[in-house]
Image (cartoon, rainbow, N blue to C red; front, top):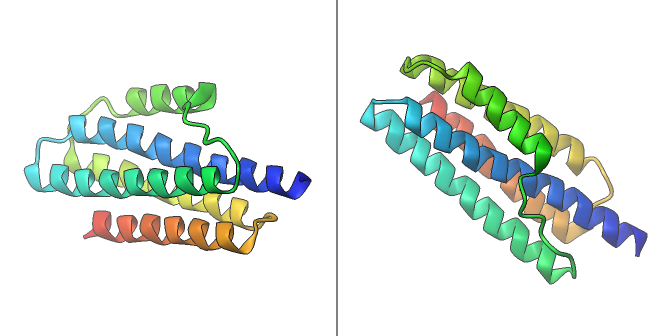
Length: 140
């Protein structure tokens, strides 16, 4: 039972990161005027939404409840991002997006080092792969 709860907690941490990413990309999208960049941001955001659905479904399937509340930590991160992104320089916004994705991947990799069951690990790795693809898309 303890392992199951740890599993659900770890998956909910990943889920929170994905929600923060969606919120961040809402912010990024509002800051850029370049339509091509905006489109790439929307594609990346869409991938994060797919990750949310994947994680939430899996959490429910293993008997847990997805934590779909951004929480205080997420709200603080959002406020800080808003303060840092008070400009419309497309390259700077892209750099911030890449930085945020990289931080999210680093956090997710730490979570993956924990005690996840095989199926949860596989799903978490899929989420990570999607996030890595997003970085490549942003760099392109």
